[in-house]
Each structure stands twice: as structure tokens, then as C-alpha cells.
Image (tube, rainbow, N blue to C red; front, side, top):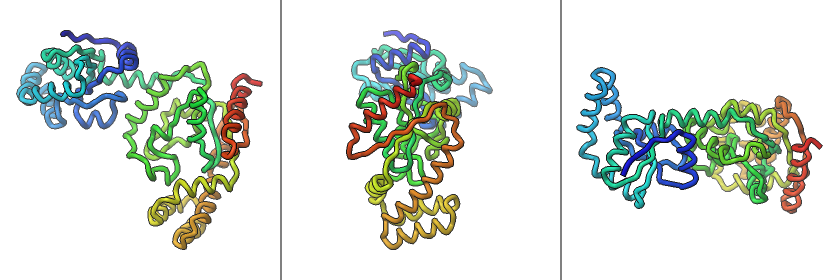
Length: 348
């Protein structure tokens, strides 16, 4: 079997269409910082070996580094082949490293010797990162879905997707719901680099000329930050706000966060005490201490509603519309949203 190298555009296209197993030959720490979505880690070198070989490469050159590499990882070759065989029983795989050089080529050679057919990424992960940035530079027709805390915007996004609308669920990708309480019940967040990779991957699956729904967000979603070029497009895109009653929002927040331990809710409330004001935070915490979750929700919604109103004043959305939305008649509400989007998008 032989290996061949292809451009990042062709590499991504093959990977998406054929859904082949994809191996990241870089070290574990590099992989954890960020990788091509769906790639499996099959490091040729661990972090310590990579450091040793990198030093030798700088001081003594490529040949000495290669020899040291074989000394360190040669005994592990059998394990690499066995791991690859388990993950890719049909023996057709794709491989990349940082620059598309030594590590991916050695891994490709090893797998070829074991009967694998290998496609390599020319320029490696570094080229993929340029591809990621290019996704954000493209102008897309975003429609921003706004609404006060507790309105159920993320759920509305997915209902829109069921109707064939294009969506980007930033909070779902970030594993965070955006507020100080947003990490509760969520998986750990990725590092920033991989968050950017995941968002760009979803963006690349959209038709840029057609409207794309995206939730109104602040610049930060937990520890992840919306890439600047994307954030600027969101800030100036057409915006549709859903108006949901305070009672409904209160009940939704109760169902969503009332399940968590009171001490956890107190801790998270303390995190925003400076911004909401010491006295207001003290009252909110007292409600929690007394077991009065509903009044705690109302107190927090009052704070977040003021924050939402303030953030809206700083945006520069080119077109703005509103839709009254009732969760008791959500099908009707979704139709109203889609119809209003058509008005915004067509400039009616």
C-alpha cells in the first residue's frame, strides 16, 4: 500500500464524505489543545520524547533526531499497529501531524508496512488552522436569535433545525449555557483552540448564501471566546427577539436549575454579586438559604434582564424584529419566527 498527501481542502472533503478513521500523530498535549474534529489520538511520540527529539533536531540535525526517534519509539511500533487496526479494521485511514513532516510520514510508513492505505494532510495541522481561520473570514447571512434569560433560545434553535433551518448552537459546542450558572450539568469545556475548530467545522457545513440562525451571545461563553471575526458578524447581523412571559421564563429556570444543590447555587450567585450589587446578591442568597427557589429565580432574572437590556443597546444589528412566543403553542411560534425571518432576510 502507498500513502499520498493532499491539500487541506481535499483532505477535509475526503474526511467528510468518506468518514474514514483519522489519526492525529502529534503528542497528547498537542491533541488536547486542539485537533481536527473527530480525529483520534495516535501519538508517534509522547510529550517527553517529543521534547528530547526536538532538542536533538535543533542541535544535531534531522538525521540524528530520526535515529533517536526510532530508538525511543521503535519498541512501541507493534502497539501502534494494533491500536490502528482496532480503530480502523478496513485499513484505510487518514493521518496528520503538526506540519505534515516527520511524525506523520513515519506513522504512515509504519501503517503502510502493516497493509494500510494512508492519506496524509499536506502542511499538517498548521494548515488546518489556517483553514479554520478562513471559515471565520467568510461573510455569512446570520440571523441572531435574541431573548431574555429563560426564554429557551437554544431549544428554539433546535426546533428551527427540525424545520430545515440552518443553525449554529454556540452554547452546545462550548458545553456552557453562557451565564455564571452555565457550566452546571454540562461536560467540561474544551480549550479555546479546539472550541474554534469545532465552531468552524459546523460553519463549513452551512450554505453561506442562505440564512443561518445563531444565538445572541456575549463575547465569552464560559472560558471560551467567540472568535473576533465571527463575533463582529453576529453583532451587526439582523436580529429577531422572542418575547416570552416572565412566568414561563421563571418556570423554565426553576426546572433547569432548581435541581442543583443549594450550596452550588449560592456559590454561583456569589460569583456575580459584584455585578448585581451586594445588597441584591445578599437577598438572592437569603432566598436560597430559606429554600425559596422561586423568589431566587425572580431576583436573578431581574438582574439578567437588566444586563440583557444594557447589552442590546451596545449592538449594531442592521435589522431588528420581535416575535411573541408561547411554549404552550410552540409550533405556531416557530412558524411565526420563520415567517419573520423571511421578512428580515428579504428586506420586506
